[in-house]
Amino acid sequence: MPKFPSGEWIKEFCKLVNENKAYEEAAKNWEGDFLFIVTPDEGLDKEYVFYVDL
Figure 1 (spheres, rainbow, N blue to C red):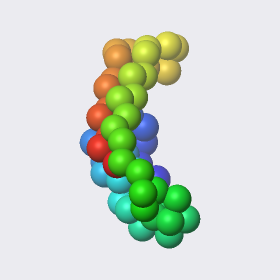
Figure 2: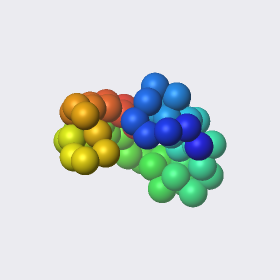
Figure 3: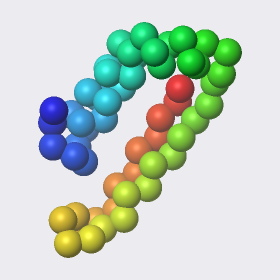
């Protein structure tokens, strides 16, 4: 798994969600968006924002 947070990580996250059969079944009648806001701490130097359209 690529290092979080990175563009490679979010691409891998999307790939794994799209390949997940349990998610496919659970979400077949649902649509939604998520905005993830990761705030800095001792391991991160800045805020990261990810938008996911499911």
